[in-house]
Image 1: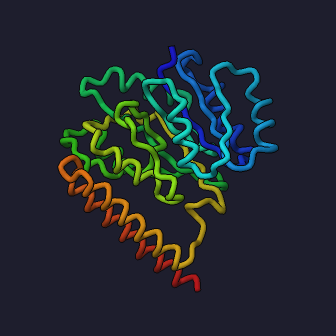
Image 2: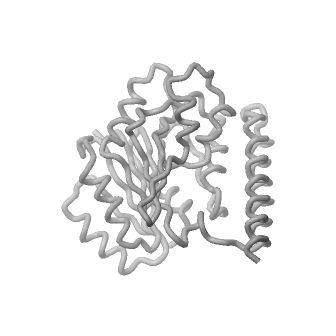
Image 3: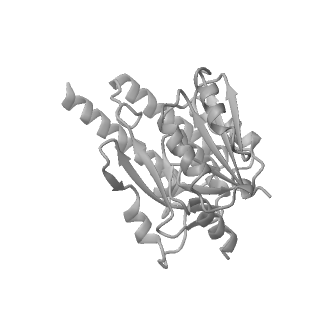
Length: 277
């Protein structure tokens, strides 16, 4: 029986997607009948669709879907609609996971007495130069096996990216990614579903999600001051719309922290932009 649905959005994938698929399809210690993989190719169809179709032919637990609408949010939303698993996992098409990733996340959520809505894995970043850095390890180590009482504000460091996590399908419910945002869509989505999050647990430290930080990626691309300011105000408005739509269901301190976080990013980007001119 399929328990986990793994959703992989992909736009003009390069050779790196085959490393990702190898991790998910061939190197997991969870048996293939317990999880499905949904690859959502968006935007340009060829030659990517035919190449992926040929590669995936031997595997029975994977579906390849094409949608014309571009954007990671549209692709993830399409994957959510098609998913049949009780649990959802999002993986980007240039990232990698440890061999025990799926099994450990699944065992953690099934054996957790606190009925966690999300299980957070360890999370590391790799660069093209082969450099590996802990991305959230300080926060992870501080809270892992600690007696800190759970609150959304305390765990806010884990509410920025949807990768590196297992979600109960019920915590997502009818909420979907906002396709109007091409940057910070993850944090907006997580704030949107935060009203449903009662507890976040941690996997063992060896269960790791590896993000590849490529040259030219959105995280490294320089943007104009106009784009920086426009994105800041749009995000601020969106967070406010979400919070004030149901203020009794959302955490005020988390909302304030989201506004503070995007303000910090704004000043950081403006400072970097100024120094590069």
